[in-house]
Length: 138
Image (cartoon, rainbow, N blue to C red; front, side, top):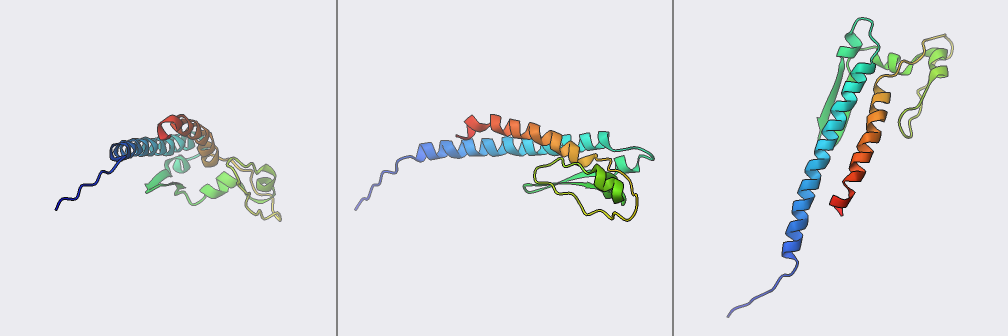
């Protein structure tokens, strides 16, 4: 006994899978380029007094996540500001960003953002580059 089946669409499915791998590879490169470009911009924008803040900028890539870190223990205060001056100088850079709670009982210092503006600036370029991939995805 012989049983023969014809499966249609296999070649098309294989071609789609190859395109998907190509698109995934390009998206991963865009993600890495974005991560390191934003890191470079954050380093340039970091206020410099001793150089410690600038040297403490790092990026961590894990799976599909990108995490920018500054290991200086005072980085968050420089980035976000403190006290009344911090509250008065708060500027959102990223979509849906909410400001921190400021202790308004003391004068504090104005924000000197370096990481959020770097990410926000490079995020616009990343979105444009992903949009340009559109025809390859479809």
